[in-house]
Amino acid sequence: MERRRVFHERNACHFCGRFVLEAEGWAESIPPYHTILATWDDDANFFTGSFHLECVRTFENRGEVRRALVDWLTTTSRLIVIHDEDGQPHEISSTGLGYTEKVAELPDGEIYEDPRFNRWVFVEEAGPYHFLELEAAEALRAGDRVRGDSGGTSAVLPTEPDASIESWSLSELLDFLEVADLYQGLLDNLEPRYKFWEGGFSQAGYVLTYSLSAVRPIPDRVHDFFGRYLPDYAPKRLEDA
Ligand SMILES: [Zn+2]
Image (tube, rainbow, N blue to C red):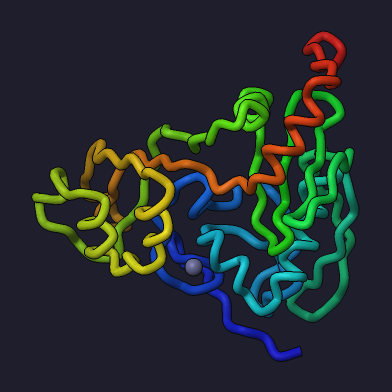
């Protein structure tokens, strides 16, 4: 199969290579120390790093990406086969996230439940995934939009900004990063809240610490599902886990 080039630099999208300013539901990264087999990548065994959700949806090999993500999300422990430099296969055991129970198959994707905790993951048909804690599921059930994480995170910027970055709007920051087009949908529809926290230099370059939250793009059918599902759902108790 024809393969598209993918990218491995820090803060660059694995699929398009352009800058990733993280915002839950729009641009995220794979948590460290997880092993998601990157069958589409000729240069690395595992899928790591950052990505724009839209770039997963439009990636040529998104079916492969989705399969690898579902394997990671919906298993507890599993064996995966990786190949060393000489092409020799090795089996290694790896921990999945344990959302083992499929509770919905929707035209938009699937919802899996964690059998031990009150939490779910919605995996879009096109690949991106969205974690939903009970509080978020309750909000969806009530017909509310849910906002993403508003905690701070940091990123190494590709070039040095001037000191006025402290007062830049999100649009100004995105223009500086040359990714405004990739975030247009976020700006237009998802009520982003951006805040500059601090900036400074490290060996890697200028490090921006910021928070950016937005409405999470959860389809109406997922709202509808929790509307049907939660009234009969018995919340799991921590002591039973
Ligand atoms: Zn991208």
